[in-house]
Length: 123
Image (cartoon, rainbow, N blue to C red):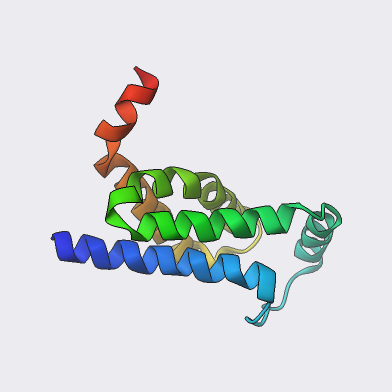
């Protein structure tokens, strides 16, 4: 089970590293967007620091998540981005909801798995 968990976490981390790097280098094609999505992303682009910040958080969180020793920190770093992706998928783009749900469950699984490391912060 430990090997399966490691493989899943490394793949999860690589997905976020890839998504974060794409925000800087734009090497993946963008899918066809609806007018509502174009309006939302247009507003995001007006806030010039937002996408670089999300890209940095995705790369950093993905690296932390992929390394077993720092996985607990990576799961918490990725959580706000994951919530944003999940909310976007539930409200605007239902086509990716299955994959996003699986990623959210993996993130929650790692948070639950490392819950003892978070207890001192809330106790």
